[in-house]
Length: 325
Ligand SMILES: C[S@@+](CC[C@H](N)C(=O)[O-])C[C@H]1O[C@@H](n2cnc3c(N)ncnc32)[C@H](O)[C@@H]1O
Image 1 (cartoon, helix red, strand yellow):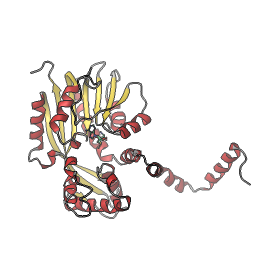
Image 2 (cartoon, rainbow, N blue to C red):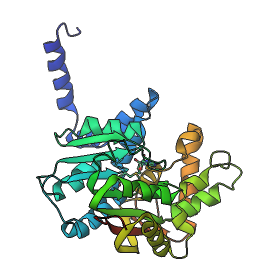
Image 3 (cartoon, rainbow, N blue to C red):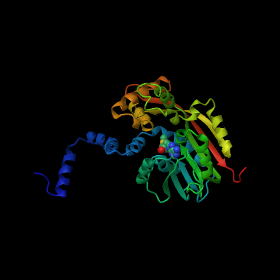
Image 4 (cartoon, rainbow, N blue to C red):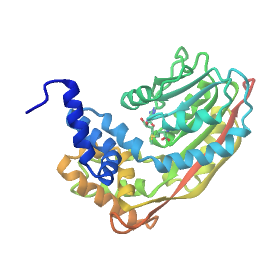
């Protein structure tokens, strides 16, 4: 006989759950976010991109952690500082990496991003009286009356966002304009990655070219530069910044398995949503193959071998002069 009350139903379900072996329960819990993403995807929401990114952003988290640990103590913190994370995405770096490293007497920590979905995810996951999320486009001029410019910010951090913007000068000008005089910024940019080279190869392949027509928009101009740090230094200088550091660094990130690597590459792939679902797996395998050919990826069987990714990051630490020069 079926349950006749909520209490009975709950008791029956609890009994059912008790029969499930613990290792199966662990697997179920581990795969819960992917399952939720699948459910949401079938309901036509883009939220699955935010969930996918949240589960597979170990590279970005590791690099942001590295840069934040190096620079947070170098900044001249003042009580009441206003802090901004540009291109905050799912809010993970803003809240879990930036927040614990800033002095507690700050006024506001804001995350800005172009993506409503990412911001929706961030603001429903992270509630904090001094944290807020703001939608804006770093690639277009941010108006002077925007809350991002008036009153502006004392500290700006940005990780893995500026590489999404073809017009680096506009992006840097915006960062300059959002900083108050005397303010400081620490920028982390993906300046070279095998993924960008592979996008270029794929954009010429007959099976993918229709989906990658605008691939060039998603490849940072720094990728082809012979001197990325020198070129970016010039952009920072032209915007009016005092430049304390601007350098590139070769970095390596290890993934437990090739599958983890594939999921991570998929999480930031800008073309995947345009590709029909039944071709997405082939597209991803082709992308991985092309990345491996570029020799900066070492991989093996999908669930076995650790996969190593080598890329280059650009780090810039800049100040806005107190008086304009
Ligand atoms: C790879 S995610 C990085 C997220 C987070 N900062 C991190 O390091 O994990 C790049 C983020 O940049 C945002 N983005 C891309 N173009 C942008 C633009 N023009 N203006 C503002 N945000 C942008 C994307 O929406 C995305 O959330």
